[in-house]
Image (cartoon, rainbow, N blue to C red; front, side, top):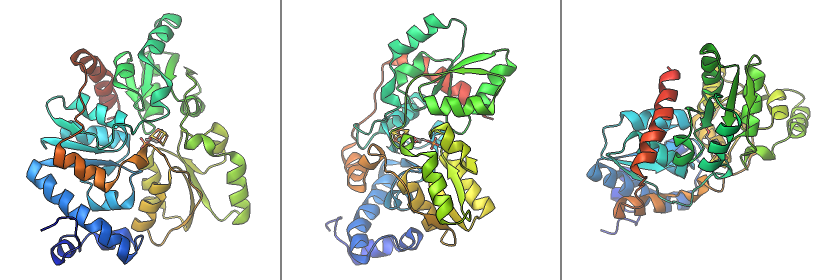
Length: 337
Ligand code: 13P
Ligand code: SF4
């Protein structure tokens, strides 16, 4: 049987998945996707593999083949506890490195090694060494959106979901100044939340979130006469966050919709997250105004299938980098509890 043909077996194997997608794909599109979904799910069982998918994955991946979905923090926590032999990272490269660091004995597959991140690419290990020389004794808090080599130079990692908490814990340990790198806007947003700590930062930006402006938010509020709930990711400029009703990691944005159940939402983050939330919350009206992450969008069903068929590309890191990078990630996981 050709596994990439839409057969009655494929239709049966994917029958429970199609309704989850909330009518986002036409019948023709679905018949192209379903054979990939069926074959990936079969191969996952054969290889004892688990697919960890970020909230920015497209709905076919998010609902069709992912075992665990979530923000960067949840994916790191789940990687640390999985008993699968193989982890397929449906997300960007730094996420796959984090999984490898936490699970050095497992095979971690990255379906496209060019799935980078503008934040991760904005800072090098050498930059961090120079910062430490310039600010001796100041703890280096590194956003997970960084390379393993940068993490290896850091004291503790953070995600958008726990950055303020980690900075508060460092304050509790007697640090009045911290370096929070490389995302300038995230650092400024945390500084606003934790005003008794001086937050030094770097010039990194997310190419998706830096595009939003406070004027965009004001225009959309005016268009709906104020009847709209605005939620934004903290990689946005502080003016955008100030103009929003709520800010948080992708998982926290999802949670606030599921708990508060607003009628109409402007979701200021990557596009696929809106598609996934719309499918899961058909009663909520999502106002479409989003930008795509070109790195996240490099991951597709055909690439995931190819990755599982060929067991490529396996993430490999130098042993000393892994050992040194594990400490700040584990410290973050401990401090997040
Ligand atoms: P989250 O940790 O909030 O999912 O963010 C990851 C990311 O890359 C956002 O752009
Ligand atoms: Fe990096 Fe921004 Fe893409 Fe997230 S959305 S992976 S921070 S470029």
